[in-house]
Image 1 (cartoon, helix red, strand yellow):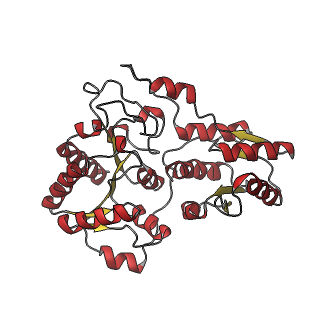
Image 2 (cartoon, rainbow, N blue to C red):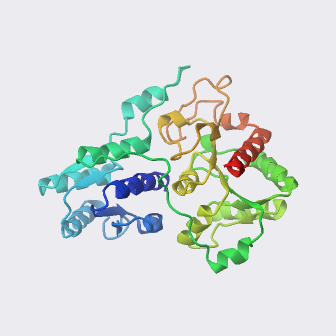
Image 3 (tube, one colour):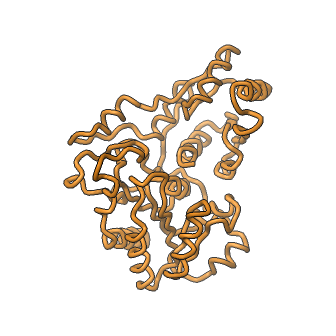
Length: 335
């Protein structure tokens, strides 16, 4: 989801700079609401578990897409499925350009040794390069983001209409190496609750997370969104937040699509790998202590942690997180 969300601000800029180009997004149907605001952009659902599964399914998908009279293909994912489609499209005479993920540079950046860090190209820049290779250059303007969306009556009933600042918190990540310990996150929630000036809204997914967030919501006077609304309504809620606290994960990118200030927590991954949320102030990233963990980053995705590094993210203190949230909110108030 995070990779898909990162395409949205790039496409928003693309649409603004190339208003006469029709764009078809090939992605899972679940993700379609992310693109709803973009003009001249339609979503074609990739049914990777049914109709388009396996080699024969990809051939079927190619045949379907050919009926759309596509002039060129920009592959922003570069995985096995899209590579198979590449050979089909090129065989059919359609230009097809794939993203350069910078695997060699990322391997060097995540080598298990102490190192001086150098920022790599952002994923957003890599997406823009694909379009440039097709003769459609894109300038990335950080101010080009999606607009705030109207809340449903059901969401308003749950959240309320009070004037407290809305603080979204997404405490989970795909891998342990980039997830803040829940006991520490609970201290963050306790401090925010005691401040008595925030509406705290919890985001996550899955049955296990649902149960955990339900307990945290009851204990710290929060509202858990897990399983309560369809994805499009959850996006609308995110677009109305005052701030989002997230890991190096999908929810950070969902908030950034709307220009919501995002405070991110980084463990064994690092913003220099290129996955920093679009348009966000670099100072809004709180990083694990590299004096204690000099090998960081050890992984691009958070799935490779050497012994003793699994809890590196715990070196970020709860007080520092709350202080950063308050600072960002105050700076936003002064704008």
